[in-house]
Image 1: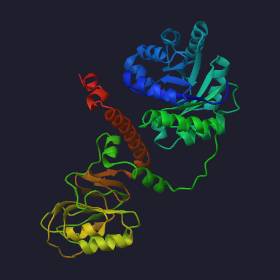
Image 2: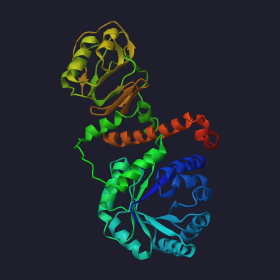
Image 3: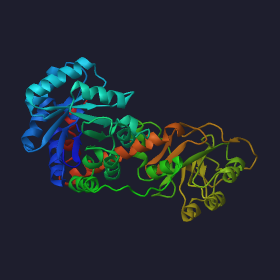
Image 4: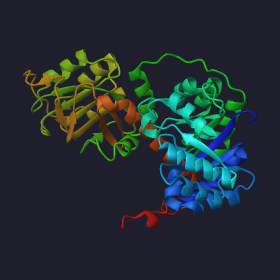
Length: 428
């Protein structure tokens, strides 16, 4: 195997779109084209046949993730035109052996996928003895969302087997280059190429990175900084999509129009415009925090106004959310930090000091705990549980990537229903 190979994974559900994206990827320098598992589940062996017809000079990888009936499934893929078939490394040895026998009969190769393998180094050595041709150090999508990386897996396996080793799992140009340095021979890249607006250019970037890999100079980031950085790249709708339509606050409007708010919650429980605790929360809040106030949904009196907003800006607060009324809206708009509320009223309450700071509250229909993350824009505000913030932010980024690609296809003259093949996928 000469030089690192670039395998582009077409993990789509629509064959026509997969072929179009595959053409752009090949133009950008892809070596192998993969019929991803979602594509095979959606289109069956027709996906492999079509890719073989479209790319006769390329190796076609059928990501079957074979777990049983190895001989039958490998035979199907081979006859459809696959030159490499993926089996699950955790499958029983008898399945692996039968897959290898079928591969030898039809003159193709077997790639063993280490996804979720408890002892990847031990299993990789066993697989080599069983006769597989390629080891795939794969970190699955759900694992990627929690921060796991194939680069670490490659470091464990490289040098332990004499087989070519592939790296898969959320790779982009930077992490693909890191994988080559760590010992990867094959780079399996999916969404960073297939979900980009310009697939050819994205493929060229990965191609360049793996052909001349260099370790990037990395700045140390805290966990919270990384979450904030990712959330600043996505929208509130992206986040609620990533949470299966959960987390959206109801009834809120952005008083300052087109804004972006990301931060951790400082929660405030108050009643009927009592503005003592909301204002005291400013002193407790740190830079980049969001003050979240439950005013008991009272709309006739406001616990927040211009002077509080000025104070919050001086403290570096990222935004304010009020389940209830806000006043001095004209002045708040000039201050320049995001304020969201369910109503507006000129009436101010009294600073009686009732309520609490830092307690769990119900705000605009959502439970908010001190330290939970919030993201807000003109579409509204979404609450993200703190313990899932890293995972959800990364899932939201994948949602955004998907939308970028769909938007590009719409710009090319298609309608949304045609791109998504809606009639085909309507619930029966």
